[in-house]
Image (cartoon, rainbow, N blue to C red):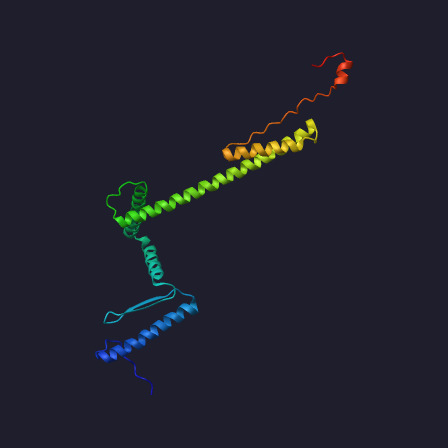
Length: 224
């Protein structure tokens, strides 16, 4: 014979009630898990026993399930003007609170309105400011290094242009001397101030005296 149909009403016997609760609770949680896996559904089940003990299951996290439930419920109620007004009032209040927190945080970062802070809160604020200062300094150093490298690159380009110009004007024989002059000037300028651009100038060759005493005598000149 099959089992008789159980009447759906409160079980008076406490022991039978507890046994039935345990069995059906486990079956309900099992079915919820199977539904989530088989149908790719987001499922959340919350159970409180008669003694106040909590049992729950969620396919993702219970917090996300509840947030999604509340959001979906509000969207369904958006057709009601009163519910819609209340929704936007809550959104506006939340945004005002966020703005107030940001403004208070900004004033504290600027050293204002510190009277209500404890020693621990002041230490946390000091640590945040030191971390921000380190980040600013690192960014500044990085930008300075980039500028120095750019100045060196431009200096090398100017030097190459001067070398080519020197070759055209005076020939390739005295290029090494120009290179030595460039290196000494460039190094001194960078050591003095890395932010000052390098100025290069062509050195003029010294005037050579090709007249010999014999030639001078032949021309009737007297050397003293």
